Length: 195
Image (cartoon, rainbow, N blue to C red; front, side):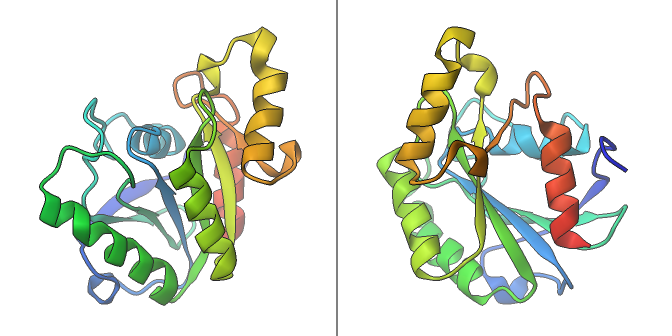
């Protein structure tokens, strides 16, 4: 049913793919630190504190797994890439952790790559998109924070962001966790990959 919040339940955290519970179907969310990943997961579930939200980039430091109670499958919150005030040894481990997950995870249906809609894709976002394409990992770009873009600049911003990701405007899901913009559309997309 369209519009119904995802019923998510936290299952576990891990640093490596082999530590994760088995799943028939899974979607993953990835993006740079401070792109609004935790806020978006909370909006999909219509819960405020399901995924930990912080003003400090880089709070998600593990692979976090949530069961989709109302339909089966799992949703994964991956650590943010880019700037983060965390110890160097943890940050250094993120690359192998995320790459290992994306290449080795059985049942991974698609990866939602979050890009900040207010600033567009950073070089790290483009690098992630290129890596996913080179490794033939199915993915969809989700532009977050669209409420922060002035109405008069939305059309230009959408075109520039799509060009930066080498996609068409219609290939991107444009959302705002704060205002609920297109959250229903993204919920339906998540469910379609898990059914």
